[in-house]
Length: 185
Image 1 (cartoon, rainbow, N blue to C red):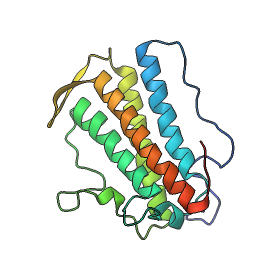
Image 2: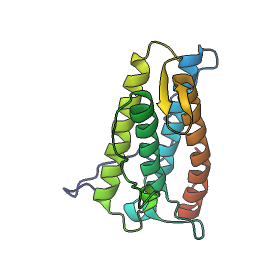
Image 3: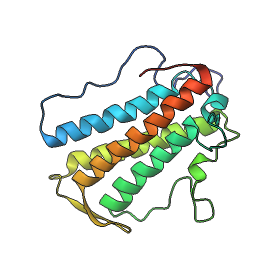
């Protein structure tokens, strides 16, 4: 990836090797949930490693609007919705979508380095907020309000986010393989 100054500046992890944090096989519930969520976040990052903006925006599965960059932007939206809006009660607008473009996160057909960098910074900022929120939460029983679900616990949100990343990492596996044949991680 080349930044605005023309210098190499990897936004995603470098290709090769597995630098994901280990998931503890024996830990308390909170530690385990947070570790699995971190691992899935890092998996999406790995799927994007070493690709150019055009490749990240590539819609590699038939007529689908899915792309790796779209998944990163969607992940940022999900982090923001669940941790800032539902759990912290912040009244913030969506990042990439709107009432007239509900799937706006996936609208990346003409991606450039600036769009990739913005998506990366946004995703990382939302993850950082989520991590701080979870770290400060007194316990997993902390409750937020989701308009469609009603009251939800932090435990439920963490489980849902693991589910969300796991599902989309399956998409990312297929997208990456179609882009350049890379498999694994």
